[in-house]
Length: 229
Image 1 (cartoon, rainbow, N blue to C red):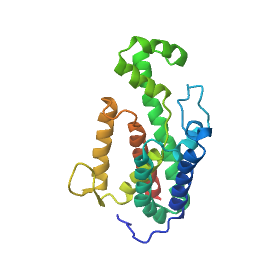
Image 2 (tube, one colour):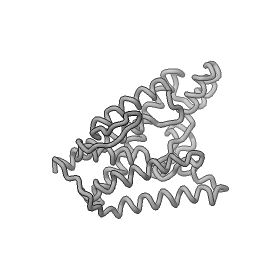
Image 3 (cartoon, rainbow, N blue to C red):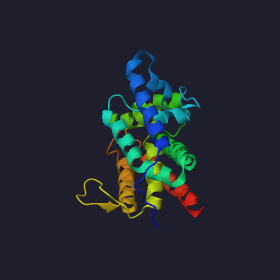
Image 4 (cartoon, rainbow, N blue to C red):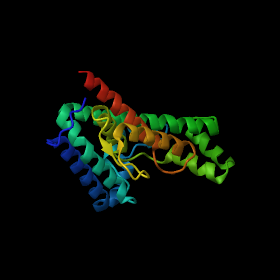
């Protein structure tokens, strides 16, 4: 079943990209207010956690890594228009935001399990004392899992890509390092496998790999629900 259509009517995509760019600009213009710290998502056991961050973290991107927002917005533009045109703005937004929330939830579960495995506690004040008994590499990794906030639209955008894979499974895309196009569904399976390996062996520190995996799976299954409709 293939509904791929080049006629894109994607107001939702345009609005999301515009908001992300505005927030990113505000981070620099109003740097004294530390917007990224306020809107990013902290671990629920961290004292800095606020409920609104579950949504706002999707609109904040790292000011130290410009490619962070570039890749996310490019992927949203490439895949989001097709999904919005196919399903309408309401269902598109459901996939986007629900995938972003579920992606963050899966990453938090992973971070919490890592913390408990090494420290045998979920008490942040107690855990901080225990950190000093670990080697430097373990300490850095655990500190990142516990205290570094999540930011970016990656989980939500991954959800849109996951939904795209449901409706257009044979559509060809390029995925590094392969020099030839691969069907999007196969490409996402490779990406999920690589993300899990990278997360387990900490091959790319600072990247929320399980948020990407959670977003893709969420978008795919939510897309499957709409597909049946």
